[in-house]
Length: 224
Image 1 (cartoon, rainbow, N blue to C red):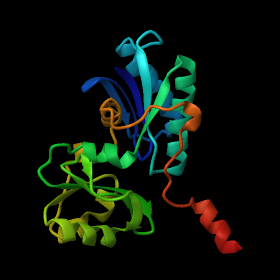
Image 2 (image 1 turned 60 degrees about the vertical axis):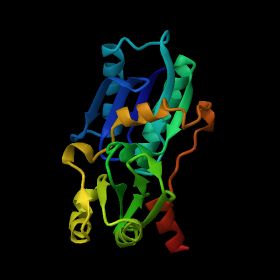
Image 3 (image 1 turned 120 degrees about the vertical axis):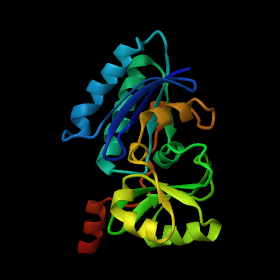
Image 4 (image 1 turned 90 degrees about the vertical axis):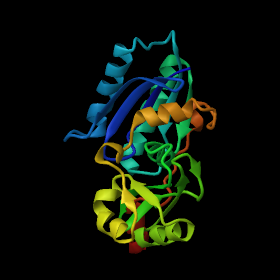
């Protein structure tokens, strides 16, 4: 099951080609340029290096949110275009599931936290980085810390919210993931997509999980 996976939900642009649980190639960029500039070149690179084409690609996997509104739209739009071009379906995978999978097998709770600004994070709680114990939500960092404490005193936090809220996390006795495991990886999206846990759908049916309104929408409501 050869899958082209894409994740542009956060700071990094990441693309990977996976075959079941095997990662054939992955390229992740977190340097200066925007996702609209970097995504298609890295998609082209991982596909060329793995000789992935219309003859062997089976699905497109994409991180479907939560995350950056602009980043998500770029990633999902690219996935839809590629799925149409290759005549395959799309497997949407929640961003937080992919982030938690960075620490799959960890002998503690895994808590992905994506910086949602205004002291809030997009988050959920996972056991061993795989089994989700709570709903995806946007909340104050102190709220998720309190929820984790009620379940366990042992937890590792991942995601781009870690550098922002590291002091709060450590002060409450929790751990943070190594820097190499903090950010999104398309390989995690691809491997999860192949697990059978997520449904393959038509590209036109892909919905983005935003969890909250955009800044523009909130400002418009405040003006009303």
